[in-house]
Image (cartoon, rainbow, N blue to C red; front, top):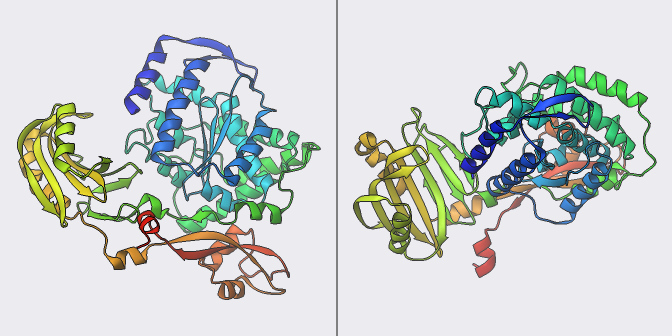
Length: 496
C-alpha cells in the first residue's frame, strides 16, 4: 500500500498545472491534479481504516456525517465528495486527506462541549480540502524529493504535536515528519474559511475560540508546565488564534438553520458511552510487553527497542535500526507448517533451516533463511504459531551479515509468546464517557466521589470547561469517566 502511494505521488512530478484556487481565487502552480488527489486520498483512507481503525457505522457516526453533510453543501469547492469519519484514536485530533476525507478522533468528540465546537473544527478541516492545502504542500515538497502521504496526515493534525506524532505511526516510521506541515498562513486561512462556513451553516462561530482554549488547557494538562514546542507545532500560537477567531466571530452572521443537537445537554447525550483512552480490542502495549485480550496472547519485545502497535502489525526496531521484529496475524488455520510452506513459497524465501516447535504450549514452526523485504535482501527468522484457530507470524529481520548475532534475541522474543493467564485477562478494563447529573452546590471533587469518576479533578474540569473549584448547579450535566471490565470476544462467544 505505501509503495503504491509513493509511486502515485512520484508520477505526479510529470504533470504540472496552473489552476485557480477555489478559496483564494488566486492562480497557482499545483503538481497534483484533482484526479490524483482523489486517488491519493482513497488509498490513504484505506490505510487509515486498516491501521488506525474507524468507529462502526452507528448513530454517532451518522451524526458526525450529518454535520459534515450540511457543511459540505456550502463548501466553496465543488466537485468533491466529502466523507466524515470518526477515527479510533483517544488523542484529540482531526485531519483531512486529499479528495475530501475528513477525520475526527473520538478524543476530540469528548473534549468538545457542544455541537457548535465540533462543527467549527470539522469546517476547519473541510477548508483545508477546499483550499487544496495538501496539494500545495505536496507541490513544495516534491521539489526536494519528499513525497510521503503519511507525513501529510501527521503534519496536518489539528491537535498539535502529540496528535501529529500519533498520526505518524500509520505505517510505522514511514512518513513521520517527512513533509512540510501546513504553513501558518494555511492554518489562518482554514480558520477563517472554516469559521465562516460553520456560521453560514447555522453554528455559532464563537465556539471556535472556546474549543481552542479547551484544547490549550488539555495540552498543558497532558504535557505539564514549561513543555517545549515540538516539530509539528506549526499552527499559529493559541493566543493569536483565540484572539483572531473571537474577533471574527463578532463580525459573522449566523445562519438560520438550527444545530442538530442545539444544547450542550443534547450534545452530551449523543456522545455518552464513547470509549476513553486505549482500546483493549486493539491490544495494549506497555513498554515492551504486548497483551491482546481478544487474541488471547502475550509477547515480550526486546528491551530498549522502539515498539509500535498499528493494529494489523506490532513492530519493534532496534536502537541502531539494524534489526526489526514484527507480530502479525497471517490467516485462519490450525497447521503452522502448512502456513509456513505457503508463505515461504509465495515470497521466495531461501530456507536454511526449519523445524517444528512448542512455544507457550502451542504448535509452532520455525524457518531461518533469507529473502527480499521492503528494505532489500535480508536475513530472516520466522515462526508461525497456531492459537485459537489462527496462525500468528513472528518475523525477525536483519542484514545477512548480522543474522547469526540477532538469532538468539529473535528466538528469545519468539519464545515469550503465550496465552494470557486468568489474572491477566481479569485485569483488562476500559473507560467510557458517562454523563453525571450534579447536585446543587456540589464541587467536582464531591461529584467524582459520589459517581466513581475515574478522571482526576483537573482533567474533569478541562473536559467540562470548568474551574477546578467550581460550584455546580442542580441538574448540571458533567462528563465523567467510568471504569468497566473488558470481556474478550472469545469469552463472549463461548461463554467461558
